[in-house]
Image (tube, rainbow, N blue to C red; front, top):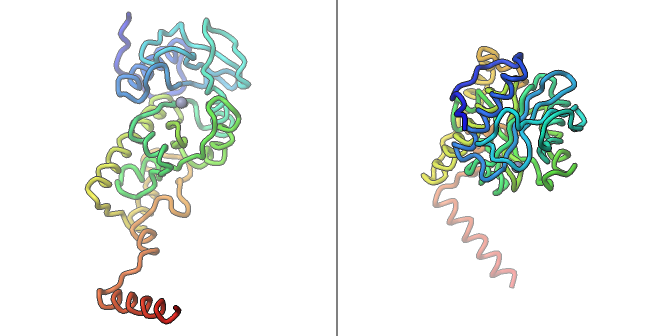
Length: 269
Ligand SMILES: [Zn+2]
């Protein structure tokens, strides 16, 4: 078997052969990093306004050869290729339709991030500056049966505003202007999920302030991040927004409250 070069370059304007090699390389990376098991996951690139090049179904993403890939139109009809397209192609097509700036989509089931997705927990805390800068926060789309319109309907409202989405009880989808960007985002989501998990294990999280987050979001343009900053209520959760719901009491105040509640309970009998 041919070993693919372990590097690809940025850029969406490439020959079809280059895109084929890039998809195989990213498939190899996704598999080697344990972001997928068995034949899971799918990767695609927008070749032109009417055609998409995608990984086929029922093949390990770590073992794909350039000739295994499938070309479809924007409705998912196969135009070329010896195999069938992934059953999740509709998700890729939705993203291309909703995001003209996107030319590549990567879907996988990385363990830690998928754990968060299965717990229904978004990766939305302002814990790490680079993550706020790169992705703002990563929401969870509600569950939808794979390969059905339920799944695309669940993603649709989030696609315009985020570049990475956790899919409840399923996995992660990331996308970008080119395939390397889409892959980097997958790597960033899983890396951040691991960091978030470590803070949970340590039992302590110190969040960035709203001011810190604003400064980071304002710097996005300097880093070539052109999409609108993915922010909103609770996205990302800052030190202040977490503190807003927290009430601090002295021991004396707490004891007085308990005493009062107990008296009221006895009095009510
Ligand atoms: Zn999947």
